[in-house]
Image (cartoon, rainbow, N blue to C red; front, side):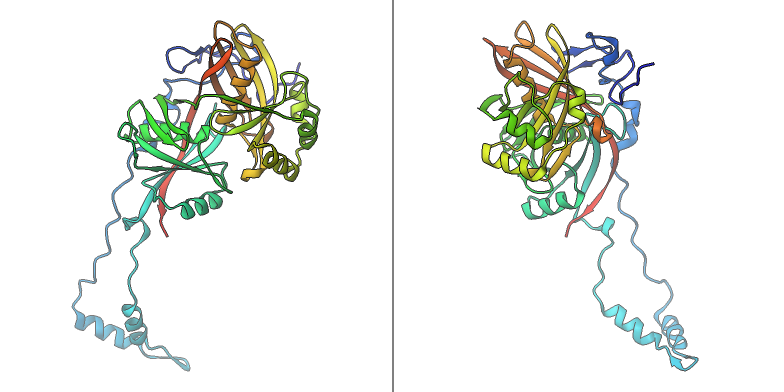
Length: 397
């Protein structure tokens, strides 16, 4: 019996409809071994509708002692008795404590933000790319950066009031090392959380550093339209591949692509070559700074039929504090544009399934649709399932 790869799945009935145009059936059309996409818009029962209900109200304050002051004074004075050779003057301690300013208990304080932790592009719970979504955030870049570094996730997204009247909110996105103008899984995850807590309808606009982006939520599935794709410079494939510990494939050429964030697309021969990659983080960071890209996507096309394709990906972005990313929405969009420009797809469209994170033990699945005009990629959508893990209160410093 052939060994089943962790990224493989058995055929099933699930399907995804991103926007009424893109529909990827549960059993991948290329061959049954590729498995289903496992993204559905009608499965809120995965963790239940109750998972993000508003938190309970503030904890009831402790009431002062109802006994009269004279009785309490007598009790405290009686405690100041000799215990062995030491005299414990409880009255002195009581008065010192009473003179200190009382701090409110954290969950009773109005100076808190709500934080929701979700897995994005997740075929199952505890997979895909984890994300912290901070609601009612303070617009303080130093605090945001410090929190992102503390959490240590690929990105943390902060939800702020919109500046444009047509937008539902403004997003700021931080890796552990720096702020990004936009990123895929933070926008997708924030859209799902905002809709689930009632802060946005099923469709809307979210402001980012590259402008307002359309988003849509249906059940557990959220999607975004990315910034228009642009092709950047060609890169020395052999040099970049050596920094990743692999040998580059010949086609398509190693090139920088962007749907808001410049990423290097570097092809390898197959999934085995992908698994064997051993990147040099410092060298990759230097190459990225020199050539103008933030991360590199090693990819292998593992299936292709008509307008549909599937690719396995590993993404490294040490220059922004992300040694390896489990599921990268911005890079998946860039890869879709790269493959579409190289001739994949038909009838002006490419539908791509990106499988990523397998080597990290966090398999993720991203659906990508690219629309072309005269062979040039013009519009990119990405989407996937979002599964909540927990929520809480973040005490502001």
